[in-house]
Length: 293
Length: 128
Image (cartoon, rainbow over the protein chains, first blue to last red):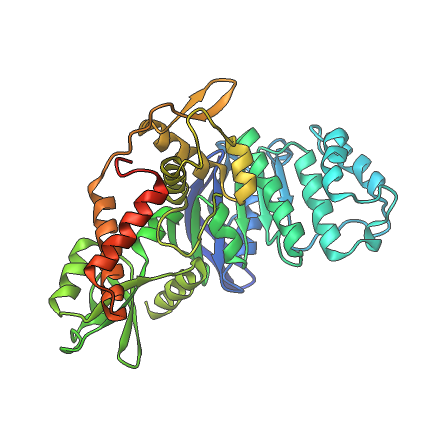
């Protein structure tokens, strides 16, 4: 389990993280989204014990991560840029991992490699970006982690490899109740696999919702009001945003409920229907809302 | 035959639940048929295993499927679909759209009723 409370982090003279609080239970997948520079990677580096938190606590199963090798050896960390010794061959890297992680199993690595088929004698520098990502993931899974932290694991992968990587993750969650923290810009990937989504912006966690909750609350309606649009529509508490295209209003809700529908129906709309909304759209609207506050 | 529409406002577990129930009613799933395991389905659809578990748990509560320890998950012998209010409203909304659409196309009520009868015939009997 990952528990983060009141976490602050400064880098240089900039507050990169402000008052971050959240928990990830075992067997759950927490997805981290946010624009570039929102603080996702800094947060991940605090969770993996690379950075020392300024204030607040980062606990893995109740223990501090920073400077704590006993906890760190249970964390599989797939960083956004992985720096292995470029001239190492894969099998040399395996012995290196076996030294660093007591629970490392090279059998597990070769079992995983039946899917990805990396040549054992290849040097790290000879591998493509996508292959290096697979290598990191396989190494991280071979330490039999209780916690998996992945920073943009699917970037630079072709669709087939991406699916294999995600399926591997899902299997770990299913079979070993691994706790997963994953960040990605590919919101389409996240919305299929995450239990909970945290939206970050400017160093703060703007919202934490289960995906089911988000789907129920944040919806997009299209409406035409021939009798005139309710004047204060955009400032209704249930409404996140309103867009107008010709005579059609697109209403993005943040609290979809029967009350809202009743209020809209009072204005006697000619059409009032729901249109599909992806997580990407939700993220964009939620981020815009964040800027307004 | 199961698929996931991430853009739908219906949560993924509910989509799976509804598709399995629909499959039972259409006879795609027969009593005693084995469903994929949580792990298999999660990999097949690339979705969270917790989502699959939740769908299966609810289907079990509604007595559509049963899990036999060590053997797997199966369609029950005598599934009786229940009507719930929310679904009823959904169906009524869908029907309204179809009726309006049909009206604009110039279809008569009789023609529409004939189409409904044909659909029931395809499903195999009105009592289903």
